[in-house]
Image 1 (cartoon, rainbow, N blue to C red):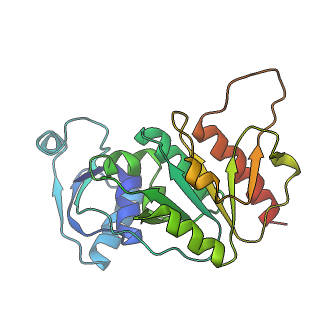
Image 2 (tube, rainbow, N blue to C red; image 1 turned 90 degrees about the vertical axis):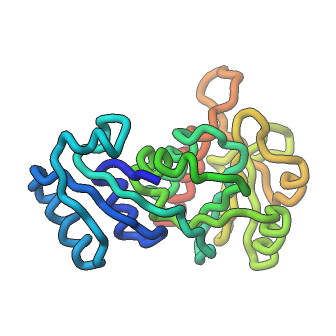
Amino acid sequence: MIVEGAIGVKACINNSKRDIDIVYIDAHKKTKDFNYIRKIIKEKNITYKEIKSDDFINITNGKSHGGIVAMVKERRYDELTDGDIFYLDGIEDPFNLAYIIRTLYAFGIKNIILPKRDYSNMEGQLIKSSAGAYEMVNIKIAEDIIKDIKDLKNKGYLAYALKRGDDAKDIFNTKFADKCVFLLGGEKRGISNSLLELCDEFLYIPYGSDFRNSLNAAAAADVVATLLFSQRRK
């Protein structure tokens, strides 16, 4: 797989989530950022090659590489650490998924569960669109999400999901538990009923207008992460 751009390449190098076969660097790039990359590549004994700008056409299909690309292996997934957790289900678009991961990481969320599927064909886009955050968070692939949520609840986590209905609470008036797992679904399918049955609380996002349509998953994640961060930092 090819990772393009300084931000993505640095994220791969610094976070050790995958093996790196080789890094190609534009020999004419002598900026502070590129010299830093050269430094850490040498420190980690990563193979690299200085090439001419025109040579990138033989490695990549576009011009968005910015003078650096890395050939890497697939990502190693993680065990979750202490802290709040988000389960992201049914978010098919890699740009939306990357944006959500970027937002969650920016607001201090380091643990993400994803449904089982092949992410290898979108990892390059996930790294780039998340500004490298895809390499920085702990990501667990759910083999059995029902069991995973039950296990987390047994460890003292409260499960939350966004939902409209009489049984849902205003998210702006919610005091979050010390240990939270949020179930966030895509716009098409949402969260399955079997998962909703495991939730301890349902929350809704009130609007300041008569808008009738739901926010997309990325916007909803923004709201949840912002409110959670606001409470956690006090």
